[in-house]
Image (cartoon, each protein chain N blue to C red):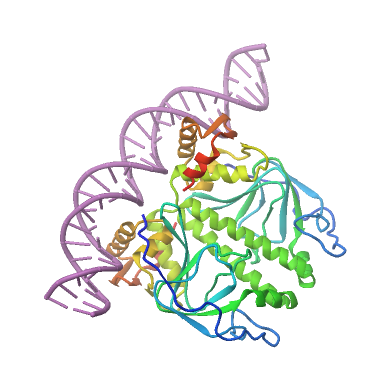
Length: 228
Length: 228
DNA sequence: CGTGATCTTGAGGGAATTCAATGTCGGTGG
DNA sequence: CCACCGACATTGAATTCCCTCAAGATCACG
């Protein structure tokens, strides 16, 4: 049900290497990068932050892909979300991170000091609003995730593929940065079930799988139907 | 896997019966009620709002209990959350409610106009902060819900009981306002499995079930262990 | 070309579901 | 007061879906 990959701690010192410079007026967090320091690189499978560590920063994926997760006592791992370029993660209201975060592949990630942001939010309603909006988006994501987890294996996998496709605009093919194990731990299934389900979907001509990390959606309508 | 209860629409017109009066200065949404109109009563199993309806209000449970839920195409119902006295629900960032809400039992609910609140948040950082905090709390709840849904039936039921107990301060007994069907739809199980699991837990002396809606936690440590 | 990591496939078992029947409780009317 | 009724809950038997265990296949990389 799990098999955790061996994770190296990354060797970078965490604080963003440049000083954070408060933006002049309307620092659009989602769109611009005026607030941010340099993009920090993370190697494949290195930790970006750990569960229960102080939530000092907020992160934005520049390139690569990130997973957040929790591990239960007995080793079962649940992936909370996958973050792709443009996505923001690590936003917490409490002082500590409630999930851990790792680079799935070689990544570049922007760091933004939380304290700076909170201070700014106290002055700018715009910033405050963006923080709220981002949290609300995360909430919607989590709620959609809940809806996934009550479905059958086929529905979960179909839902996952549609979700990934929706995040890869303008293409009917999905390039998966994550392993079968990651997908399984996201969907609450085993790798074997994920693999078998993909094969089924391929046999029913809903998708084709030219390589294990590349999936072409051949019949999106069928997938949507399968999605419950 | 579901069996949806027949829901009557309630006969109250929705707008709070009194005009909303902006509070003088620090309208602590969580604690005081200065912002609010009168408590509005809802009969058992009546709808408070529906999925995809405009999110005009935000709600606070005064008495009773509320469930929010979504129904899939084929009738499967997923309960997103249970709300007890003091809890706030219906807070959305988008224009529409993403879940439906119903009174589980006879309820009194305070309504707060969203537009008023948003306007206030634009003036008061305190209010803005509270809105953000409430959303973040909901996010944490949803994330905890996700962690529940990947577990075994025993773990889910144990987790549910512990969650309910934690919300009933100062008591080792839980008074359940909701039916087995509600619990099942919250946990992603069937009523039969919930029922069987409760019987198991009773047989293992972790709980006792004097009546179907009342559950006494006899061995909280055992439940915590079962919780995964 | 060998080695390890990742993925797929197969066979068997187990946990939860489905289908069906029985039990319990609260209310209502005879 | 108690018999009946419907809603809700429990229990049992059979089935299904997914997991576990195990073996091969494929791929990346030295």
